Amino acid sequence: AFLRSVGPCYVLLGFGLVFSVAYSLLCVVLPLTRDLRTWQGLGTFAAVAFVFFNIGFNYVMSVRTDPGSPTQRDVQVMCAEAGAAVRRWCDKCRCPKPDLTHHCSVCKRCVLRMDHHCPWIHNCVGHRNYRYFFNFLFWLWCGCMVTVWHTGGEALGDGGISVFGLTRVGGGGAFRGDGRIVFRR
View 1 (spheres, rainbow, N blue to C red):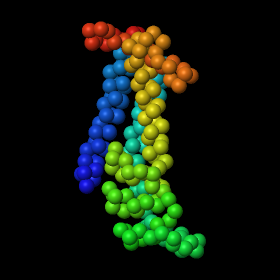
View 2 (cartoon, rainbow, N blue to C red; view 1 turned 120 degrees about the horizontal axis):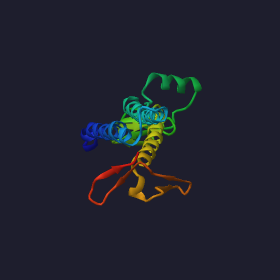
View 3 (tube, helix red, strand yellow; view 1 turned 30 degrees about the vertical axis):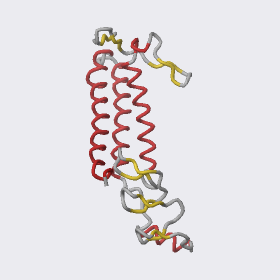
View 4 (cartoon, helix red, strand yellow; view 1 turned 180 degrees about the horizontal axis):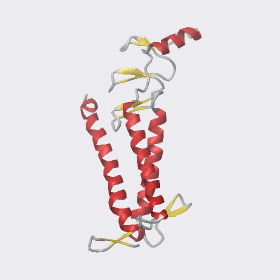
């Protein structure tokens, strides 16, 4: 009951966090650290905007896409055509439960190929929205790396930070001891 009531707050908080980071990176940090009048500056701006567009798109699609339910007519018809015998039955939903289907105690329904209930999307991650959720996590990781790349800089040391021992990330701005940020051009 608690997760159902605070779920929309988590969605708004998640969207607000992504939007605020995207806004500050695109409208504050990049104009201070890159010359946006050059092709290189515009290319950087477009690439960062593309990453944050994908984060937002996949987040919205994860929230809005139904994860799938065995109570939907097409699933029941498909099972009947395949001649699949019903091995399990959900007593709460009063519907057949195909393999990998679980009843979500938060959503109060059965979900096909249920992975988990995510409070940040106020939805279950299941058969129909798993792709969007996975893409959201991938693009969010890319957005984190882009943000560190453009804002990390000397705050993390001259060479940035090591990511999985493969590459070094950082190089945009530098934090001073008095709390101010100094940007290099």
